[in-house]
Image (cartoon, rainbow, N blue to C red):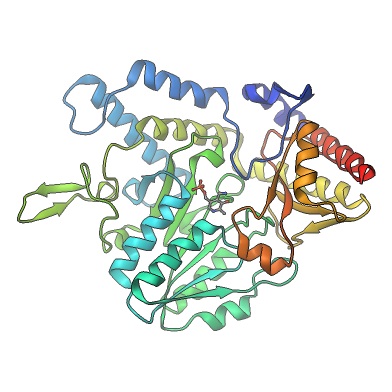
Length: 405
Ligand code: PMP
């Protein structure tokens, strides 16, 4: 299995770069993934040979670009098993997708005194938009706690589900501690109480199978750049019946049906939520990235990354003074740790000088870091092109850093 994934590395030119004279070991995939040639070529060819603004164009190039953009929408829909492509809204990324729901769902369904429920392990982009909604509408934000391993406390979650709650917004996979949350069960519990659920799939869609129908998600947000696609494009999935009931997020071209100074009417789904010229080069490149992932098979990627994570966890634990942060039973390709009393900033900087790219700090999840009672972590996050040898390089480097302190 290892050699299959190793062979794929040649598709990613950046992976053969040297950093300070050392082979790059890129372990910052939670922040963004590298891009295979075929994705970059889609972007390049798009701009060189196919560029024309989409929709309403009578000319050849515009019509082909429109078809390609709409085919990309279908592609995304198939990837997450949506009922229809009209349930796929292109956004700039997870953050914009969540902001869209916080605004539009908030306008349609929320009022003073209502509640939104999030978990303690959310990324800031799944906290702050809800805080802004709460401020706007005089509502309150409730927080699902976790245990010390980093697992959601389901009984406490159930206790939060009362008639004032309008929506639960929960991450599928934590970007800091890698916990895979039981979203299917959590959605079923929320639905039983008549509550809608948004799933933040930023860290799950690239790594594990996510079928919106199987888990019955009402909304799902994810980013193209974390799944080998370009930056600046992301997805909001929403059930059509819900999207139809909530107002547009932004106004402008594309999202309208008729505009008159007396009254303006809005376009149908998904265009109602796509004001302005969309990133039609980004969408086709994202579609190419999803083809790349599907040709390998997300289950195969999941199994390989799991074996990498298990190996890395086992090897790291052999290092004196190593503390793994987040030890949930079910984890995805993220490994946070602390090395003795050495500050994560020092570990990250020294690893960088050895060619190893990791992320350090609060990882845009300050409330989680506070809950853990620490200042931050060092985070290694894996993708399909990482190897067991790279884990060995990391372990060796950490041992070396340890002897320096
Ligand atoms: N949610 C999670 C769990 C994330 O890991 C991230 C990115 N680190 C985001 C949301 C935000 O994604 P983006 O910056 O692509 O909008």
